[in-house]
Length: 510
Image (cartoon, rainbow, N blue to C red; front, side, top):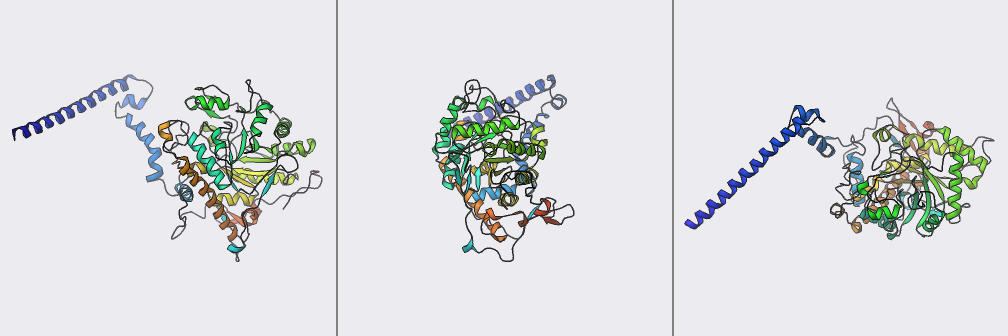
C-alpha cells in the first residue's frame, strides 16, 4: 500500500514539475517576444501591441484556409469556388455528380452562359464521340491526328513534383489525351506514362538550348525523336503573367531539374520576359517554320491576346510570307489563367479574359481565311463542362487546363504553389509532402476527370440537339445581359466570314 502511494506521489510530483516547467517556458517566451516586439521597427502592430499583435499575422494566414471551408458561399470564392471544385473532385473519383432540389447558381448575373435546349434532343443511340482532327496536315512531315477534346495544359516539371508529373502522364495515356510539358523541358517522368506530349518552348528555351541559351537544332531533333512528342508549342505569353517569363524559386531548382533544364541548381530560374530572338511577327513566323523544318512536327504558339490590331498584322504577314510559315495551331490563354508565381499587377490587371479573346481570335482567323490552316486551342479557367461547351460553341477545336487537373490530383487550393510547401505534394519537392501523392492511384482520377468531362459536355451537346460536342455552335448558347435577359451568343459575337479580296487563302469552314 505504501509502495502504491509512493508511486502515485512521484507521478503527481512529476506532472506538477512538468506543468511548472511548461508554464515557465511560456513565461520566458512571452518575455522574449515582448522585448523583441517593442524593440523592432518593421511592424507597427507588434511594436504598439507586443505579443498579442503577433496573432494578427497568424489569423491573417489561417484565414486563407478557413474561408473556403466555413465562411465563403458555395459560388462566391475565387479563383475557384466550392461548386467548381466539388464537381472536379467527384468527377475525378468517378462518383455520382447529380444534385438535388435546384440550382445554387444565380442565373440572372450578367455574363452567365445559358445553353439552348432543343425540343427534340439527340437520342443516346444517335450520339457520337468527338471526331478526330488533324493538326499540321500538308505542312508538317508528321501531322498529329487526335480525337481528344480535353487535355492537360503546360505545367513544368519543377513547378510541379515528380509524382504529379507521373500521375498526369499515366492518366493522360489512360484517357487518350495529350500532356503539355510546360516550359520546364521534357523529363523522363513525362515519357514514362506513354501519353502524347506537346513540347513547350518557353522564353528560356529549357531543354532545347545550347550553353549560351540559344535555340539548338540538335536538341530539337533529339526532342522530336521521341515518338511520344507530337507537337511543339512556342510560348509567347501566359495568362496569369503576360510580359513576364517563368519564375521558379531557387529552393525548387534541384540538381535533377537543373540538369533537365540546363540551368544552375539552387538558383532562381527567371526566364526572359520574351524570346530574345523573336521581336516581330516575321521573326515569329520564321521561328515556327524553322522548328517545323527541323522536327517535322506541327508547331504553333501560345499567347495572351489583348487586341485585334496584332492579329491583323500577324495574319497579314502570313499573307505575304505564305501558308507554309503559318502556325499549325494557336493556343489562346485568357487573363483568368493560372500560374505558380506571378506579380500581382500582372495576375490581376493584365490581358483579356478568355470570354473576350477567344471569339476575337476565331473571328480574325475566319476573316483572313486561316481557320482551316490554324487549329484553335482554348486555355484559361475551363474546368467544368459548361466552360468547355462554351469554348466549343465559340469555335475552339481543343481545350486545355492545368488547374483542373491539379484539382483532380487532390489540390485543395491552399495557395502554396510558390512556397515548396504544398500540402498535397503537387507543387513541392519536399519528399515528406510528396509521399501523400500516389501516382498509381491518382492516374485513375486524372483519367476519370477527362472521361467524365467529355461525357457531361456530351450531355450538353445532346440537349442542344447535336450528336457530338464538336458540332456545338454559337447559336446553341445565350449570354445574360445587364437587364437580366439573355441574347444569343451568335448575336453577341456574330460569326465572321472572309471579306472579298481580304486574303488569297481558301474560305473557312462554317
